[in-house]
Length: 113
View 1 (cartoon, rainbow, N blue to C red):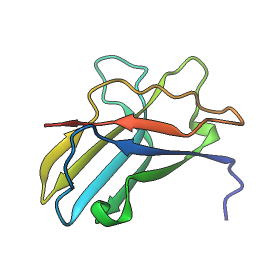
View 2: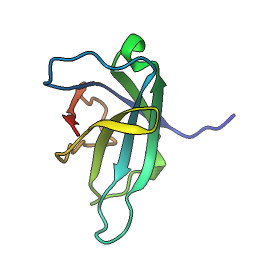
View 3: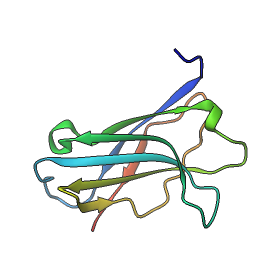
């Protein structure tokens, strides 16, 4: 068992379009270090929720405190897919402060593709 300190960010993904998700939809939520330009963002945590239309759009991302670097920027991104087809995606940067004792529940807005 590891002695690494971990923290969790909780939240909910939402969308403004009045429609039900198709059966067997999948919610993908990622916590990323997006500090470096021209380099793919480093993933710190991810959660995939199958049957999101039933399970809901709440998420919990657990990350290692050791992965949080001073001066870096972190953000949450989300998307909803159905049978490998992208339905919704976050289009705005959703920054989050990591390493603090209390992070309020996050709300990530996704847009219809």
